[in-house]
Image (tube, rainbow, N blue to C red; front, top):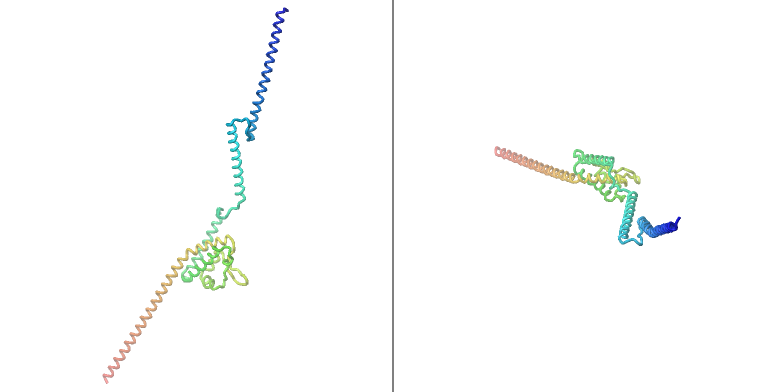
Length: 274
């Protein structure tokens, strides 16, 4: 092999080694520059995942991350509030006013009202009860029911003595009065060896009394009108009887006067004949 060929081979080997060293240095440089960039990307991903803002993030990135963090917090707060409301609604008892009435309760209310209407119709029957007694009975029953409805916690209004003059002369003496008491929830009980009518302190009894008070209130005006008509009729009958009596008295007086005149004429004629 010649000296020229040896020199060319040495030159090629040197250039190859130089290129290899250059490529190695380029790879090391890219690795050095690429490592911070990869760390930055990983940090941004971690910040997005945890809600933290990277120190070297741009203002736009910081603003976007803040908005995203606030949105996540708002969603979490809304979810907690909804869960709290659901828990409170589950614990809070439902009131009777908010509960929907069942068909059975509506049927029971309608049946109770029907019994009360039948009882008050019996009270208002003029063939068995005169209008003044009807009015006294309706007014007394209305007062009893209204007192309990207006004062549900006062036990004084929940009982009335069965032998009192008010009950015997105004309610029990009227046909249908005792039936109405039973339909309105009043029960006859013995307290201190005496008979009483008493209504229980229950929601069902209060509802019955409220319905009874409404039924009686609607008939109060009718009872007063019937009583007024009855009183006017009685006054007319009394006036007619007095007028007829006066006319009969006058007729008797006139007949007596005619008889006296006839007797006087007879005596005068007899005296003239003698």
